[in-house]
Each structure stands twice: as structure tokens, then as C-alpha cells.
Length: 74
Image 1: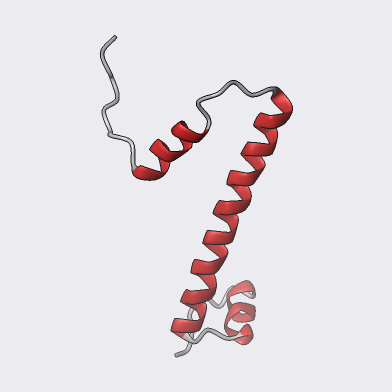
Image 2: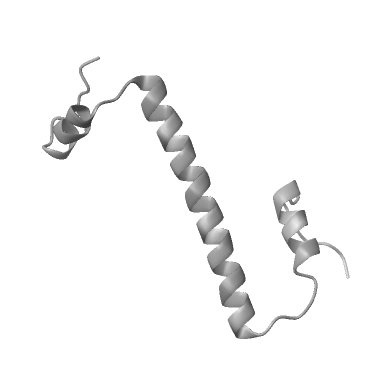
């Protein structure tokens, strides 16, 4: 069978395929899914925290955004 993927897999995708090459029951699959979700959440939160620190955003900046004042004043 020919590989019909248009976009090659990245290293993370290949690693996941290597790790999950065995058959898992539904409970294990749900646990694996949650692990991946948690991992992605942590990575996104780290990136957000770094961006907020780098840009120097404050609580007041976020409160202004929530109030509809879309401009940050620094």
C-alpha cells in the first residue's frame, strides 16, 4: 500500500506512533489522550507565561482587554 500522506509527519508524531504501536483498551486510550492534552496545556501555558513576561503585560492590561479596551498602553 502506498503512503498517501501529503504532509510528512514531524518528530513528535513519529514518536507517538512508536510509543503506541501496541493495542490499548478504551480506558488506556482515554488515559493516553488525557496525558497528551495535559502536556499540550502545560506547553501552551509556559509559552503564554513567557510571552506575558517578555511583553511586560500587567493584570491591569488584561482587565482593560476584558472591558473592551483592546489597546495595551506600553
